[in-house]
Image 1 (cartoon, helix red, strand yellow):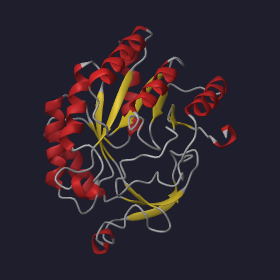
Image 2 (image 1 turned 120 degrees about the horizontal axis):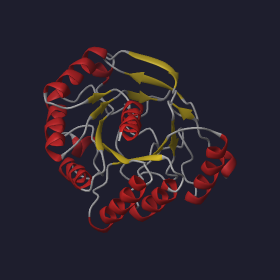
Image 3 (image 1 turned 30 degrees about the vertical axis):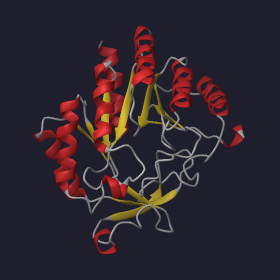
Length: 273
């Protein structure tokens, strides 16, 4: 199985798969069939292959969770983070889960251990809508629960950023403003906006009214951040993107257009510390 696990350095970071299907089933999810990574693979196989890759390749940051949610099964996700932390890199994880209790305690311990080695543990909390979440993200912890995760992570000193992506063309901008307001109150350090993807069969976007989607500028090309490089259509309205960036800054937040920008910020912060 190891020979099918691919890694790629992109902007000094490596994306690492969880190796399990995500149970949350968000309607825009592009991880369902293994297009960006194997749908199911043992954590040990992922970690052993990454260790070989790290001996041969230079990079600063590991990002866990682009193919699924590491905390859909919390103990598995935590065990993977423990192993990744032992590689002496900055480590980031993405999640939509409600993190509290013993898992939060374990993350706090891990953060302290990494900080002692001059490395940062950080988090991306995914939240793509607010009032529409029961329809768009029906099996996912509620927006209120995810904001609680932001509060909990910030309280134990883990820098946490909210990924407001994909930006969904049929979602009112007031929902994104609500996310920003709630996120800032919870201690979020910044907000990432990003595109909506569709494969050649139009999956991941079928829930969006066709007349709305047709108005969104798009282009089809290989996805640069994936080691598997699927060819997808990227939907992104530059005018709306600019409005969202300005709204975030007007509310007093920091705005980013990719998680790579966030990783560079955290790496620079650690160097300056």
